Image 1 (cartoon, rainbow, N blue to C red):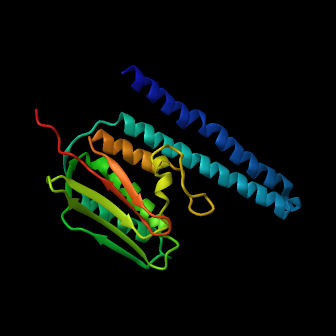
Image 2 (cartoon, rainbow, N blue to C red):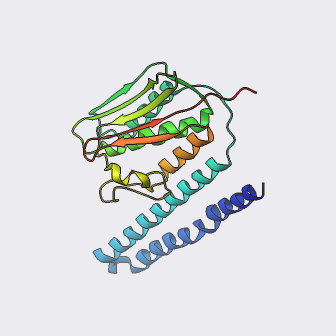
Image 3 (cartoon, rainbow, N blue to C red):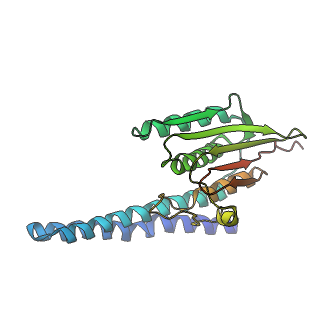
Length: 231
């Protein structure tokens, strides 16, 4: 309880105390350009634009950090969840928001369900499919799959697979650490918090998550969601 109270206090500080200076920085950048008026040359406007971009990135980092901390505090309310429906929902969202990317094949296995918290599992599906969508952005035609591979003992292993940029498995140990990224911002934007959040949610459900990938050949993320223990 003490640790949770400290985390709540930390989250409040992050949300309020860090955002205030960011708003000030952004506001002063606008004031400077406004005061310069016609004297504001191209370099000045470029500097102001970079300040706005940096503020936006810091705000994104704060949002992801808060999301990560809330995941730690969240209770798991288990019930049957239609993962296929979640995957279709997320896929439709990405297609609608990225009108310029029509060349994408979504292969979503029908009727895939799991026992878990609907809200938290939505976060899992959104983050994993978001990564697949992002890292296939430079492919002529993206291929993104969601499905399940039953194991010999009957344990379902769910997966999200893509044909995107991939990564070297030698660096896979960094994937689930907050703010750890295998690709630079000049290649693919991001904060490096999504997979850390996914791992925490999977662990809260008593499952595990692991990757398989090759550089330039796409990536697959596997995860398990054991059923709730009946006492």
